[in-house]
Image 1 (cartoon, rainbow over the protein chains, first blue to last red):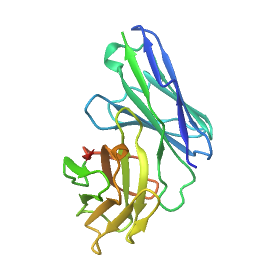
Image 2 (image 1 turned 90 degrees about the vertical axis):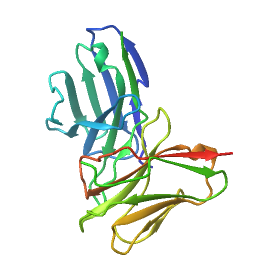
Image 3 (image 1 turned 180 degrees about the vertical axis):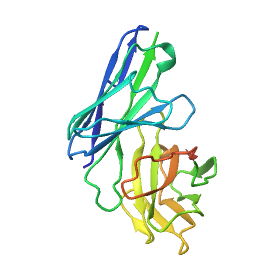
Image 4 (image 1 turned 30 degrees about the horizontal axis):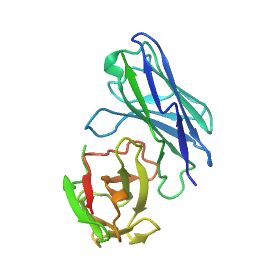
Length: 117
Length: 110
């Protein structure tokens, strides 16, 4: 149980294009989903938190107009990197949390590696 | 802000128990201890969590000291596939920001 998928697993795009990444909870309903970013040899950093049906909450320093998050259903959240630039190249990871019972554990997707040329 | 401290790296012989320590001396009463691991180029994998009692599942055991200021993750029979970065995280129920810190890089040696 508690499986989270991401699509695509990797993407290469030209500078200036937009890229959409999907995150799905496959066997549970995710009331809250999270988007993280990880640069090489660094730890995960939370970008934003989204609750189904409401606007995402972004961490300090993360541009909400550049990283568009939509959490339209209890099993799907999308992250769109708009007008991507080489500095946006990173490993993007989503996680999902179901109804908060007990510890409210987050379960992570396999990640999406983005390379912007 | 780091709420936990872990050794940066550890080695363990294949087939032996791997004991990964974590200090969390400022943990509050309603904070859980979570353990995740990240194998190279993959998303973090949930391992186990606990509040104050010791916990065991099919992957590992979690031993939390009585004062809750430290804990140990035990992989009973380490395999090469257990080579990963292990993160000890403390957080309240439903906490949004899991601060991953730098973790412990465990290398299982044949």
